[in-house]
Image (cartoon, rainbow, N blue to C red; front, side):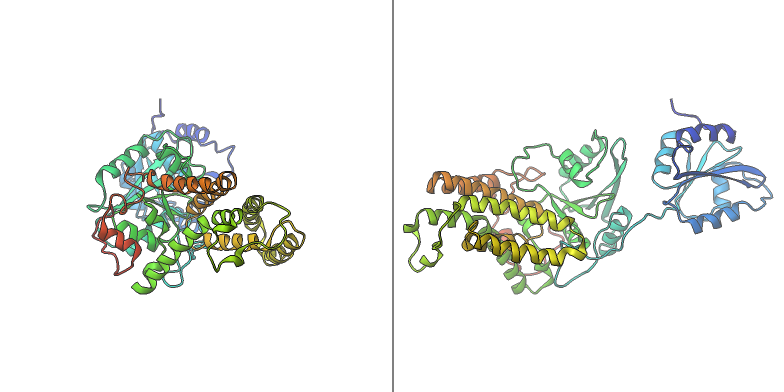
Length: 473
């Protein structure tokens, strides 16, 4: 049974000191003071409150009060000037408010608690995301504080139809999750299903933020490598998706939004497509699609031609490897695929001051030595270099690794079964894309499947700015 608050502050303090583990946790503080001749205590978490504002409030509360109010609500209205104030009686609510960073005041003679929202969360500046940069447009980005992120969206959508539903997920973490959408523009069935899943989600914590939430929301077959969600660290992109009828989920401590539903065409879109005139945006979009497709099939196609040089079209004989191959091409490509990921991991964990010299070492010394020593042929290095650069033409990490896994499977099948393996690899790619579904259960290739000519043309050609009132299907 939960504790019933009484009017004796000593009994209340004895219970909540043990419940909050004040004597064990250095950052949970309890400060006693006198207000109007009565004993009062203030509970707060160090690092979550604005010290200056709290000190000013305590100075005011410690002054003499001629006629003491009858209850906590009347006391708060007269003596506390903060805008956000709640009166609490339930133990569960008291726990939730304190560990959310809200300060609590217990006063002798009151069987209620005054909750004061004087929070200030540690947060970095809203600088442009490192991965999702644009040539033109806004330079702000989401941060790890959910209140800041919702404000960045509100700044762009000043409409009463914008709904931000706050929920709590995780039995231990009690992480704040916000479901954001435009009322009247979304799929109501999908919205109700997502909210129902979030409310009934049995999970201890969202330790990996949105990835933990994504795997809990969608427990389907994860062997298909293509991503189910679109992630964005840009508030302008997120606001545009909301206006188009998407549902956006924000998770506290995560600097990214999760956009639902998302098809392949949604994920491959880039922000620069809309910050440039239609002809330039169309060129950028088509270039990105073409480069991603070439990156998928380039090395398997080259391997197939090297195994069957008689199939090389006339005039392209220069692609034939002339130098001796000490290592079969399939092993060269597979080793390079793994080595590239090793270089990526090394770059992530390298201190910024050493990144430039180590990049020179990796690119010049290692690259030149591997070719001159006979480990790799220069053609294999060239094509893998193109593949690496092509992966950075689109912003989605998940889509880049999906293409990488399928490319490696195509390489293995082509090396073992030749033209038949190459054909099976192409069919496998088509099957993975065609039979994939969005979270809403619709086709991953919409508007290609089911076919919608008008929407399909808009996916390829950026003719005019999108009409925000058209609901995204």
